[in-house]
Length: 205
Image (tube, rainbow, N blue to C red):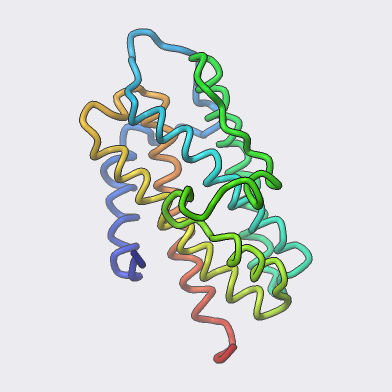
């Protein structure tokens, strides 16, 4: 479901003032994802960590095209930020799963583009046809499609975080809580920025 800009601003404010208060001042690279027996994980935690890996992997595919296909420098800068941040988060989620002897999804971009059926996609993810459309686009057409699709993609990630926190007993593991909170804060902020960028594109197209 598409999130309007007022709702996004409210979500970002809540994230900054509430859920993320416990994580203030903590950088993602400082998160310790080693096993912690005193902080058990739930099935919902595992679903979240496992599902967010292919979700992020698709974002890497989308953002990777911006360097050559986008016309605007701010779109390229945003795409680079997405690549760096989500690539690091994939590594953290893989480590978390691996250290607990749990299956680790394949984040290979080619697997993401060709290995999943549309009905298997997580919230906000692009279908194979939409990925193909984005990959063919150039210039302003790419900018518009990229921002439109990435807003939806980010909104899907926010939905996944909301579902995690709504699951009984979930996100009590400190590592899961911190990572999910980081994703929530980063992506709500980027959604707002992408709406502004989308509004500034030339009319039409």
